Image (cartoon, rainbow, N blue to C red):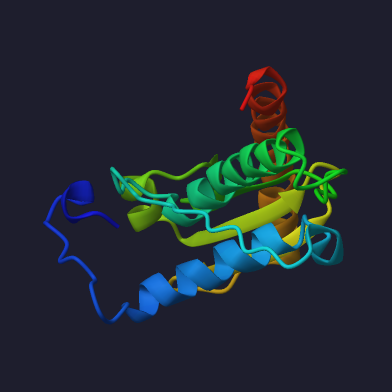
Length: 175
C-alpha cells in the first residue's frame, strides 16, 4: 500500500516486505497464474503492479480483478508485437469480498463494513463461477454451511458483474 492510502500514514516497505504484503502478493499471484497457460506463455515473466491508492477495504480483491485486466492488456501487447501467436489466457478471473453483518449479507465490503462484519470472505472465481480461492473467517462465532452458501451466492452476483466489466475493458482497449 502506498503511504497515503490509509487514514494513518503507512510506512513505505523498501527492503523488507511485511507479512501482510507477502500474503497479498501470494494470493494475487496464485489467482492470476490460475488463468494462464504457463507453457504457452513460455520463458516470460509478466510483472503486475498493484498499488493501493486508497485502502477502504477490498484491497486484495481489487488487486486481483484489476490485475487480470493488466495481465490481459500485457498479453494483447505481446500478441500485437508478434511475441505470442495465440493468447495463453484460459479464462477471466475476478475477486470480491462478502460478509455477514448482524445476519445480513453484504457484497464488496468497505472498511467500516469489514470492521463490523461477523464473518468476512474473499472469493476468487473464474468467468464460469468456478472457485479459485476462498479465504474466510468468523470474528467471534462460528458460521453455518447455509451462511457460507449465502455468501458464495452473493459473491457470484458480484463476480458476474466484474467479469463483464473486465471483458468490456479488454474488448475496447487497443495496445
